[in-house]
Length: 273
Image 1 (tube, one colour):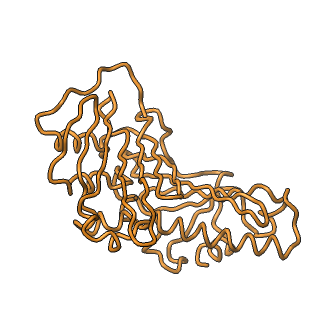
Image 2: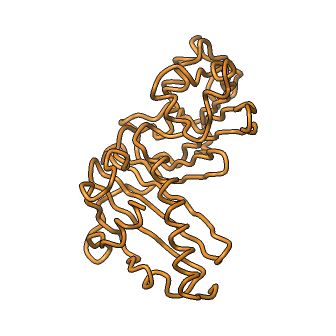
């Protein structure tokens, strides 16, 4: 579940395309394998649990923090730096035949976009694909669908605030734990946050999806877990977002010097499929 920036959708699509391209290239070349846990007391029960929970959702006044999302089988990790209007998003994907691992990371500062690809398991794969190991500055106009490329939208990359707002009521269970029922059909922001879920197949069940949220001792939302029921060919699953390391995560800046170069044509070929 991610904010409506195209981030996870694009990332998942690019990762799938990249892995297929890399696997085909490696085979044709005949290569071998080569949250805060401070000591502050837990939050006290609130007279307005929904408002209290929404107040814990990250906003642009928060310091840099880390996040992770588990969306079915896909796990994304990253950093949000609200002061810089910046976000970093990474994913690791393994290929079995031939055997190699691709770590792909996007960094976004406002509209500026960089990508870094790390390939391990097969010697010489970077050179074979003409992909540098440094950050690559991307030109959005050279992307087939630049509107899907990641941009910084807000400090809540998993749209937790939009999801919580769909609940008619939120119950405070004490010790910083809240529960409620989310309506995944409520609005376009919520619907688009679940690209890995067939919301239509859920039918009426999509309007009452149980969630559990935890607010840490520091007053920040530390996790939101949705229990997606089985529907059709879709198995039951948990969608989990974690926000942590508030004030401890690194601030994000534009890659500079020998850390970065303009993206070569091979990078756009990879992204555009």
